[in-house]
Length: 223
Image (cartoon, rainbow, N blue to C red; front, side, top):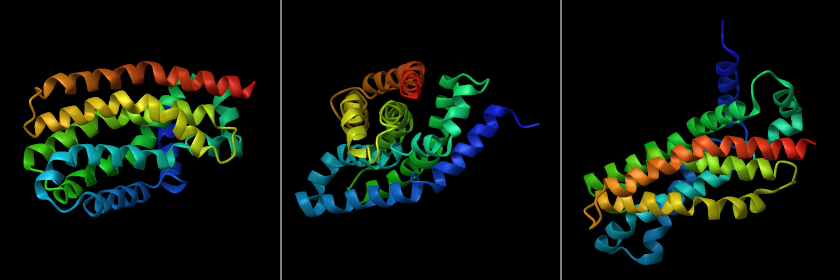
């Protein structure tokens, strides 16, 4: 018999794929940002290789923002959010499950696409591995932080801009250490494992704290 948590995960994964959270949309946006960079900074291979990790991380962050505003809004519109409030499953755990499904549907496709797009930015093999490793560790933190903004703006119509203003400052530490680790993997002066370990710690802190913050925002807005 299917457990309630697994059933919730499957439901949220299907909704994330179908409603405003298409992984294909994020990948297309990701591709668009990467493609326009050489037109903006020039086709110099050395310059593209140097800024490539930062460009890939910024593009992944902006692509992730596309789907955050629908993380809880669809549930609020169809009444599912009220059922989550009244259900036996703790709301914090339900938020964590929703974030996991959202990351599987939107974050994972970006990670898969990153090595192919990195080739357009003249990235070497080690640099590509560093970008993939840092995105694999860091994008869950982006999703969890985005859940806070999505929960805080769930009752705001077209609150995507407000949500982005709330989320972007909180994602700066993830961006800093993600780019630092990716650049270190490409042969930077900083050892790779130092910023990578901090990035892992940020993600673990996000797993521990963000579901509680998002659940508290949802409870407050539901009062």
